[in-house]
Image (cartoon, rainbow, N blue to C red; front, side, top):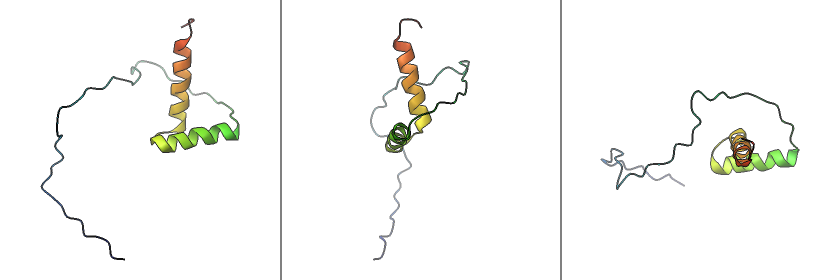
Length: 77
């Protein structure tokens, strides 16, 4: 089967329509980040790896955000 030929246009990648600002979700640059080792069951790790693939991110980022959200929800912080 022959591939279809790509037809280029004069589109220069301009944004169409109004822009919507998004909430700044990145931690401040001054916030220290520390590395830790966590032992997870294979089933749990496989879950986070699947989710990361589905969301086009890393499983470490998903776990980090999950732990951060939990810690911030507690009264002690």
